[in-house]
Length: 190
Image 1 (cartoon, helix red, strand yellow):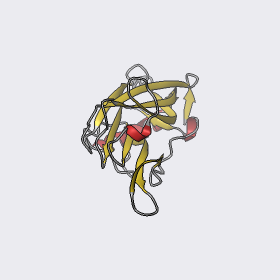
Image 2 (cartoon, one colour; image 1 turned 90 degrees about the vertical axis):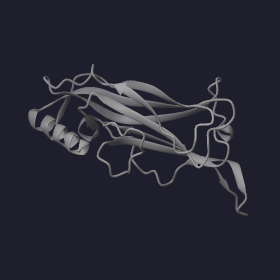
Image 3 (cartoon, rainbow, N blue to C red; image 1 turned 30 degrees about the vertical axis):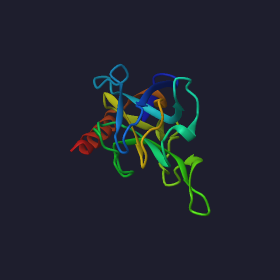
C-alpha cells in the first residue's frame, strides 16, 4: 500500500482550556499538514500513534484534582476533517484518535469526591496503529484537535493544557490507494 519516504517524527500541538471553561465548550487547534501531503506526488501522512498529556497552570504540573471545579471529564479528539465545535461519535470515519480523562466521581457510599483520576473506560478507540500498512493514512491538509470538559467547568485561576503528540511519517501511495483514501475522506465530508 504505502512506501515510507521518511523515518518517524512527531507533530505536537496544545489546546488550552481557559479558566472557567463552561461544560461542553469545545476548544480547537489546527495542525497544518500542507508541507507533508502532496496530491501530485501521491504523498500522504501516515499516523502511527497519538499520545495525550494533561497539565494545569503556569507550572505545567499534573494537579488533576484542581483541573475541574467538580467531578467531570476532559475529552479530546483528533479528526482529519473539521468537526467545528462538535465532538465526534466513535463511528465517524474522520475520527483519527480520542482520549478522555475522568476526574472525581463517587466513593462507595455515593459521596462525591474530587480525587479519583483515571482514563474513561468507554473510550476504547485505539491510539496506537502501527507502521505503514497498519497506520492511519491522512491525505487532507489539516488535522483538527478538539478538547472539551464535561459535567464541570475548568477550575481555579489556571488554564488546563492538553498536548497532543502524533507520531507519523511521510509515505508515498500508489494511485489506487491514494484514490481510495481520497474518496473515503470526501464521502465523510458529505
